[in-house]
Image (cartoon, rainbow, N blue to C red; front, side, top):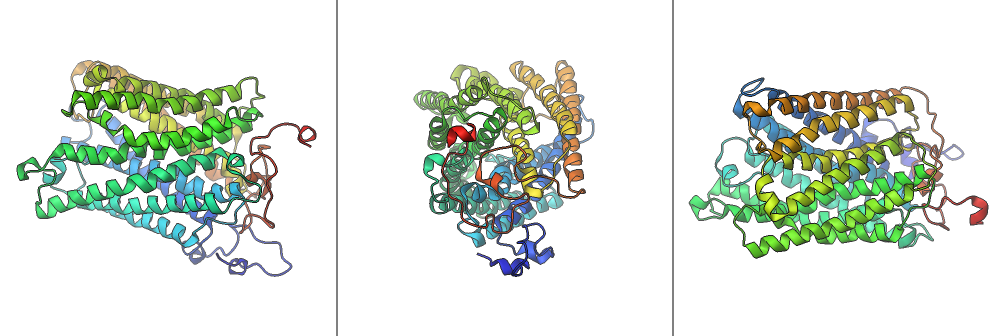
Length: 542
């Protein structure tokens, strides 16, 4: 761990916070401070979100009308591939754990840093290397396989497929290192008095996420290396022309990628578990049920990959088992939603920006979860498979769930991270635009999919044009809302620090430190005497 003298503190002076200590660029790129690493991750994933969003806008503009609007068919294929790959591997997977989790987790646990600071810094620079490799693929012609790299097309097509798959392979190490660090930190660095059931639920969510990262990510890494080997040496693993089996790739890929859905959504659920009690002024309902449900989701998620393959020719018995397990994994998620709503019941709800996004999450994630049950039903999935219904469901979970929760957490911890308060008025306007824009964009896609519109198609019959037009207009509203968020958050950085230590009157340990926090988080090691959601009056607690 870095000594405080490395940040320029001197005896008798007030210890600097992590932002003002040693402002030079070297102090940032070589830092071992989890807060600075979290901030560097934050700006990196936001840059990826912007780039992935640009490709999304290009895709929606192309689909404004049948036939060519902006791009040729091969350009369209490359655009939606880059949109998916950037959003999944560079934004959604690392967005919450690596940025907000890196910043908040040690402070929430009462620790001075993560267990392995150097491994933490290595994970960030591995992320940068992997991101650079992925973006470099654009300058070598781009990839048109889709973000899933399905074989045999991905092993036979031209273009820098090997470079993009190797980029995802490298990014996997960043994910694994972060998971190892979080598990060690939670086990070994909790403050005195913080038992497992006095630990914030965000920490429980990151713990369950880390289990999935460590166990599932190597499977994806090996699978992507096999694609590279097949392209380079024609070894015949997935290509049927060489004696391989393309369905084997689907098994390998989805054995990682369905648990990866929970790598994305579990941290989002952890944020909601922090925001809702803070702005309902109530102790969270069913703390242990929410904690155990996070671990349950982590383990059941490894058993449901086959529901992506109902149309692949697998046996009826296997399909029936995977369908049952798909319904089963919905139960822990439903427990969480019930407990969040029960927490809000008769609470003193304060509709600040984080709570607005929290409520938005409940509505949108509920739709995403319920439509997932349709896709888990064998007979219904045969009709809806590879249609725009799947696109809408996926975005209601990933954008309506993960990204909205990310925005909730970003607004919740922004004053703590930077010592600045943003404009609540503009935050509410932006939240409204995002909610309206999101639903106008993706609700029509459920209708298109149920009527047979296939996903990923460059062209379509004229009967779908009105719904595509509405969807594209919705994407413009959504983009305006997101750019407004960027505008008022960045504007808040231009003024003097004005955030108190605890602007939300929350109960977690992170709100007992100044805003922004000092270099080593706490002047003295805190001792935990009550839970993180105890909103009873102080005299009652005493």
